[in-house]
Length: 149
Image (cartoon, rainbow, N blue to C red):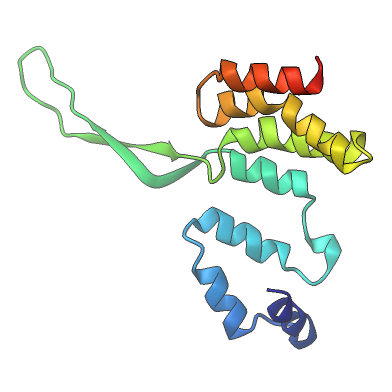
């Protein structure tokens, strides 16, 4: 919370309270990104889109391994070989592909709260399709009628 951040800024080091809160973040990638965002010097921090790019990329890691066994023509098995599979990204690509452009549009293209709501309503079908995986014709028709499109 804001009090912890203000205390961190004054102390110039992570307080135990803030450290405990960071440790509660299950994803090590997101926890590392949050720690990086706390650099006191703004030039040491990345831009928001850079954090988003990093968190939406899959990274090679020890979270998933596959073991393959090969059989020769004489039916003798060779020893199993382990291959590291990329770990899933910390954030789904929907954040980068759908939400980031939507939020950019809301802040750049809409001046009024009604304008922001209209942009959200117009994006409803795309957001539902990419986040839930369904095409909600009823919802799409509703927002088309409401927006007069």
